[in-house]
Length: 178
Image 1 (cartoon, rainbow, N blue to C red):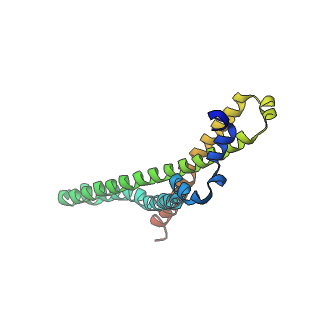
Image 2: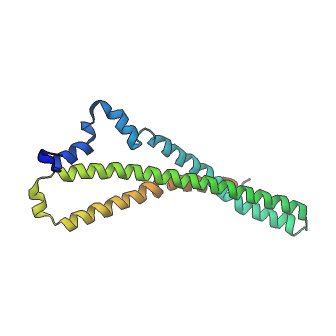
Image 3: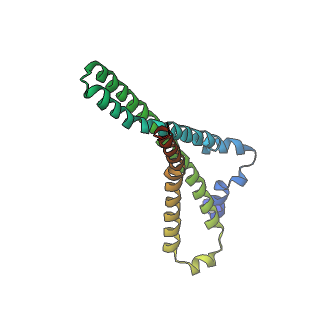
């Protein structure tokens, strides 16, 4: 708050600008989750890499169940394979939950920091900029661009790594030379 208790642009900017945090910088950074961001990235990457081979394991298990147990009438073996299949589905569901949670968390953390930076930048512009630029266009551009970045960070980058590992696992599993 500025003079006489009025909310001013400078007061808002100084409270949001990380350069003004001073000696409490590490405490403020921990509140924002900056310290745990690499952990979220590692969790998302690890679960994405582990999910890739599990995803190609399911079709193979169905093939084994049909070829070796259903056609031969081996009901006890089919029951064991079905329990194994259910167990793999449960493990995959838990890993997928952590993957989606971690990748969404990382995406939201990056977007939060980006929004703060955009806010600091917009509030530092001269008023003549706002006279020349329609506010609707500015708000639409900020909102749409930041939402596009949210999607990219939340699902795009980490999923890309998982898909590459899944593709490599598929080629290794179904190698015709083997």
